[in-house]
Amino acid sequence: MDFSTSLGLLPPTLLDGAILGLLYATIALGYTMVYGVLRLINFAHGEIFMVGGIAAIELLTFVLIPLGLPPLLMLGIGLMFAACVSAAVALAAERIAYRPLRKRRAPRLVPLITAIGLSLLLQDAVRFIESLFGNFIRPFPAIPSLEGSFELGGGLILSYKSLAILVIGIAMLAFLMLLVNRTKLGQAIRAVAQDPRASTLMGIDVDRVVAATFAIGGALGGMAGLLYALQYGKLDPFAGFIPGLKAFTAAVLGGIGSIPGAMVGGLVLGVMEVMSGTFLPIITDGVIGTDYKDVFVFGLLILILIFRPGGLLGKSVVEKV
Image (cartoon, rainbow, N blue to C red; front, side):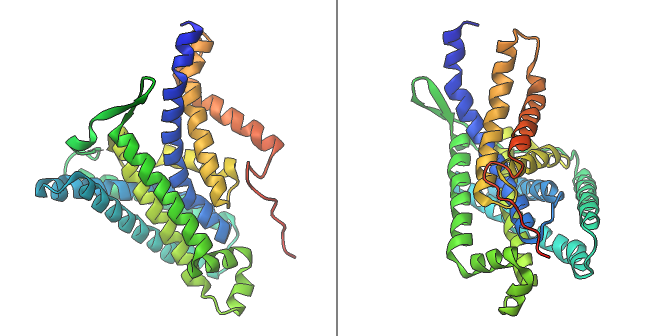
């Protein structure tokens, strides 16, 4: 492939990378919010993302599409339903699995192991429930109005699905920034993240703030699950593992605990992944295939963190003694 042809692949590749990166960013926000408040890596967040997406697919397939509602209304209801289901699962996880450990001041390793166990539990629970009704792989139902595409100019084509993901994803990120920076709940979240004990002395109910943080992160993850299914056409009980792992990587890359860092990390990771998957086979003349894109991405992540351990936008954490 000559240079001009390769250069022509750059704009659509960047666009695809931005869409994938936006999905990673919306999932990464759940990791970074919980870590910012509790210093806890909630490895069950990928499965919370999956549960919300599958629940919304079921609602669309068996309720909303048979009713013949307008496509945008169906998508909006599906997003709200995914947010509610995932928020409920996240709240249950916080109340049943994490809060007792926090109250007992369990070692940091214990909640981490609990999160992994909860992740496996959610995978198998969804697989069991879906298997009762047939195949547990749930395809995203066809919505004709979202199947088309249009040209942006210069031969660059954007599908309506991708446009919906861009608009909704940016709206989700903007909403979270406003919530955290311009509301009383956001002030309480930031206060608890800075010093839980002092927040209690100031009259803040730390348990409620922690629960709200889990609910918000879960809701964003559920909405991201439906958007992921919209883009890639299906979800299954194991679909949350790889996107969840990459979203966690994006959070670390941007600076875990930083909301802008999660956004930047997601976009950088998405663009890196799609760029390497497209151009590595071209540059190496087929010696290195598309399957090696993750090796390149995570290798570059290691190099970045060697020179900037806190991530791109992260800050050094000072331990209080």
